[in-house]
Length: 634
Ligand SMILES: Cc1cc2nc3c(=O)[nH]c(=O)nc-3n(C[C@H](O)[C@H](O)[C@H](O)COP(=O)(O)OP(=O)(O)OC[C@H]3O[C@@H](n4cnc5c(N)ncnc54)[C@H](O)[C@@H]3O)c2cc1C
Ligand SMILES: *[C@@H]1O[C@H](CO)[C@@H](O)[C@H](O)[C@H]1NC(C)=O
Ligand SMILES: *[C@@H]1O[C@H](CO)[C@@H](O)[C@H](O)[C@H]1NC(C)=O
Ligand SMILES: *[C@@H]1O[C@H](CO)[C@@H](O)[C@H](O)[C@H]1NC(C)=O
Ligand SMILES: *[C@@H]1O[C@H](CO)[C@@H](O)[C@H](O)[C@H]1NC(C)=O
Ligand SMILES: *[C@@H]1O[C@H](CO)[C@@H](O)[C@H](O)[C@H]1NC(C)=O
Image (cartoon, rainbow, N blue to C red; front, top):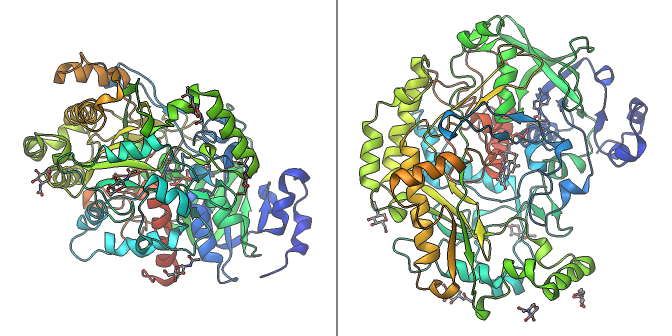
């Protein structure tokens, strides 16, 4: 590994305390004037996927890479603290400030669009739930391309294993909490860890047990096994330090290579094209939070000898393409941008998971299932103990992020009308639920997706239902894993270059979403309140409330409280055939442009039934091989 002392002189404008740790690592710049003129690869966005790809491409010690990141490089405790899982996203300095357009089916509510703005991207601020989808979720991607695609469960499993370093829970907690896992679904070489807390509330285990015996519910041996069911899953946490493990810690901090450069606080304004070949990237100093871009800011342009790799995430990658002249001609013309490549899918097919704000409380959790997470809030002896063991040994409840057990269930298991909804979805005039004037290729892609979901609604291979167990009273964390509605992320026509894009979830645009979510609420009721294993827990439905029972009442509840986002923006640069509205091909190359790939959550064609971070790591690992070797190689 190269010694980097000669590079330190380049770091003139840094504040010593914030950056001294990283002077030993790869070269970091604060100012565009310090970067080289040329690199082999220029990566836009130092987030989850961007840093993973940069690490792999520079492994040979020769290939030169520049990563350009909008946010800062930070050691803040808010990013690394695991307790509760929300401290990163609560620190506004590391989050973009984006609000959706008013949601017409949600009483014109405006939704906060959360995404990480810091080195590490959303992996630095997420809730650390470490989950992958079912095998059918990934086979669906390949099926859009026909029979021979390598974008399948089999084709991704080696990259799921490569992406994370699984460290099993300690023997004590494994036994007392009844945790099951199977290391054959995991790897142990990555710098990004999947670890486990050293404590679980006995009430969590009891809530897991309460799923056993419900008709059709399978208990999976491991969260990585690719089947729906109820199971335990790890946390994006290094178990040695009990700190968040993320793209920065795994793919930057400990990588000491002279050929790996990172420039922070820099906003990419454009992909430079020579005809339809990507040749470089332009960027400016990132404007301060709340400030519009500065049109007089000094522009730096770097050349990419081999490729430009766009990894700005589900919200910003379509914006970067559109401002560079790659996107739907109608959208670009309205914003006064010259169209270089008319690519109708850019910014369309926008998806996120929907969060239903159901809430249940329990008055009499039996002693055998105590302490519960409620006790931690109400019992001083317990909370004092919790603080003491954390301070002494970094153990106890503070080592838990958002939890480690949940149900991920197929639709036939939760609803008696799966066959009917499946038939209704297949029979829809799908295009009617897209924005008017959607391109025919985008409509064809939507139809292909809906037909795939119609079949999934009536089988038991795709999870639609997700309830995260909280070891006590529960609110939120009830999720629709496959919303049918599709939104858009397009540049703001009034100011495409210096404002955030217009994010429209188009929540509940497809009316079947309301029906599906209604059944998700009904099943949750049955599980919590009409379950032989927990019926003496004194359960009470706080929200939506026992009187909200008919389809119409549930629809009203959803319109007033649904969140169309669990912060998993995806699909806006979809990997789909061009004739199905795709933006990138199976090699993640942008259609119609040479030397440009997209590698991040935006290429996900249909969301997996899982939180998205593990999937993004696997996509990035696979992309690195496609870039280096021209084919998957594991
Ligand atoms: C609050 C929150 C909670 C979440 N919880 C979970 C969870 O518990 N489990 C889970 O699996 N997933 C979770 N996710 C989702 C998961 O973290 C993301 O899907 C994943 O990290 C996305 O990776 P990405 O590479 O696509 O984008 P990101 O990691 O967001 O990276 C994009 C990067 O590009 C940079 N960028 C954007 N535009 C520009 C520009 N113009 N110039 C330069 N740089 C730019 C950004 O600053 C960012 O660093 C959560 C996400 C959030 C926001
Ligand atoms: C642990 O799981 C086994 C197998 O399902 C079950 O029989 C046992 O009751 C569980 N133990 C606890 C404490 O829940
Ligand atoms: C890592 O995985 C390999 C192969 O599965 C196994 O042989 C080895 O013991 C594991 N190492 C550690 C430290 O767990
Ligand atoms: C799916 O599970 C449900 C509930 O257990 C069951 O009734 C149904 O037969 C299963 N369907 C298939 C296709 O296996
Ligand atoms: C509070 O917690 C302590 C430690 O778990 C326990 O011994 C005690 O019984 C609890 N008190 C109440 C009132 O539940
Ligand atoms: C911390 O761990 C040590 C070793 O296991 C143990 O002896 C000690 O009691 C623990 N401290 C607290 C406060 O629990």
